[in-house]
Length: 440
Image (cartoon, rainbow, N blue to C red):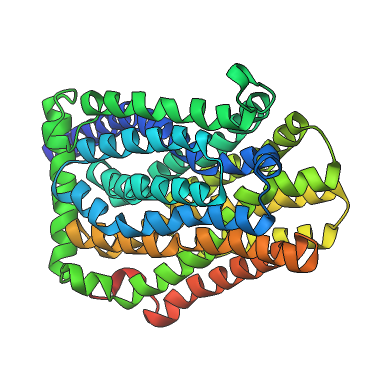
């Protein structure tokens, strides 16, 4: 009995050491990669403060160009995610980063609407597979019970990218080096770090724990055994076939839910600087600095939601509550109208949900799927759901042109977030109470 107690204590010690070492080694680098990725994706929202007037783009043209990124993103998402699972996360992520860095920088040389559309479309193609690949990659290193906190640390890069990127973009908008406008330098200079980090990724990342020479043998053995036990438990309960996973009711419901979520998220990301500019009439630097404030709130929210979700082992209600808060916050933004301070504060409320939903949501697919089936499902959810990133910005621009006000579009984003909250709660109804126990 005493010997058993010693073994349990010893195992717990090894486990704690392994989790800490993996977190310190893996998470800061993945966080940095996602900061760069997200900034290259959304910096068009800051560039538009000058770009649309320079090139004569209407709100509808800008909204279409900002959103067409996600059409390109859709095409390679599932194959890219499967490659992370079956081939090499390290090599695939390096390829993604180099290609998207080059295309992001080339966006600084567009001169027509057609060129803008193609640049955004190809940027989406280049980046396809990055985020869902990272979701799958985290599953190679963190147990199910630790995953929400790991996701929270990873997706905290989104608000950080906006917090850092907002004032930096504002400063870059003010330069005119070599006769090029500031918005062009914004794209060029913010694209280059991705190329450098893509090369570094080949040497720094490790595909799986079995290959991790930087882990001591006892920690490596413990982590491999834990993840293998988890994989076998899921396979024992479910049929893990890719086609079955792609048509699973939970996967389809999560896909449509994510579509509605992303509609709201990118509708806000791409239009927030423009809305604040129209409300305040301030300089670009002031507008971009004020735009960072809601993302500070979002950063705190994603970390708290991740901690709470892992502590309670609950995912569905955490996701639903977050999206309900986002919907209410955006509804209050629309109600605030011309009150700049109140509108910014309500964007902060919305940011609680627009970022806080992620740890719980992205822990759901891997709670009932594993291996290639999980990779394909995550790819489907992210690729199809991200088409909402095309719909949200475009609808805001379209309604802005039709009504003469962007607040009609904000109301649409609010309704989308509230619908997402309702759909997440439907998972209980569809699964008779437990999403985790429904066989594929």
